[in-house]
Amino acid sequence: MSQYDYLVVGSGLFGAVFAHEAAKAGKKVKVIEKREHIAGNIYTKEVEGIQVHQYGAHIFHTSDKEIWDYINQFAEFNRYTNSPVANYKGDIYNLPFNMNTFNKLWGVVTPAEAQAKIEEQKAVLNGKTPENLEEQAISLVGTDIYQKLIKDYTMKQWGKECTELPAFIIRRLPVRFTYDNNYFNDTYQGIPIGGYTQIVEKMLDHDNIDVEVNVDFFANKEAYMAEFPKIVFTGMIDQFFNYELGELEYRSLRFETETLDMENYQGNAVVNYTDAETPYTRIIEHKHFEFGQQEKTIITKEYSKTWAKGDEPYYPVNNDRNNKLYKAYKNLAAQEDKVIFGGRLGHYRYYDMHQVIAAALQCVKNELG
Image 1 (cartoon, rainbow, N blue to C red):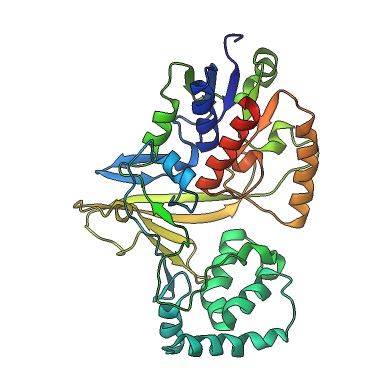
Image 2: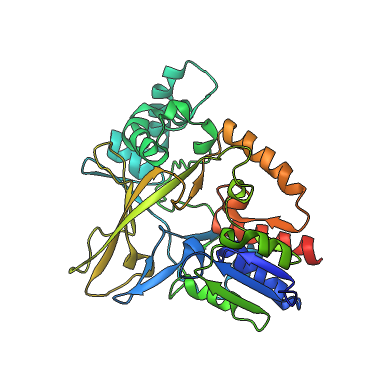
């Protein structure tokens, strides 16, 4: 293996960007992936002419022109705008919370009326500084929206009471006193025409890159550590150290996907189910990401669940206990001079795609100058 400069563990966005940039700089890179396909959680697969997001909805958005230009090297993006809706016991509300939401809920028409209603409802906090997610949500949107559109959905998503979750999880929740249904505030937004997998395929299509799938790093960790001069590791940082300081918490997901013999199932790409009785958190109808006109449609019901060893980890649980433990693992990682940790699992951070790319490009800059 001495002909390689780097072993990249994981072919998701962080690993692919690093491998691509290192290869362009003349480095020889080996990429190994434990799944049977490349592209990590942004993997899309064509079924019935529809690009299916196999691991949940991925909408690319950023205000960083450099990152937008970078990703556009590898695919042409459409003009998709993320405008999810919430279904609460059959009633439909717009997300993000905006004047359409407030009008449906309270009958208010002007921003001043909506703000007055929220102020009236948040009075239950008696001016207290929010200390948990429930209090933070009420301070932003009042009690009605919290009860109908936040409380049960959040409990399903995180498996914890809202009073047990930190306030920061919901601090960046969009609340708009306009009739704007665009969920993101970013300048650039869209879905790659033809799916995400092509992006990673193009990143890894280089004479200096070799890729192997169905390869478990941990089956031969000692050999890899001995044989490769440098390793970029994008898996779980606590697993790398054999959980010696304890296990970090993650949330996992389960997906139920089905093809339906109809053109249009729900009229939107993403519908969140915010009541406690519905077991799934949302339904994704994949064709709407690319304005599809196919005769059939494909939907995915998404269920959140507690992570256990062997499950795929999707979300870090960034509460005080886990952040403190991660810091201890980060200190251990700093002593590993031949291993670079990256990505959502290596950094134990809930990265969006543009943030992953930015972190990977910074990592390459630190490495190669």
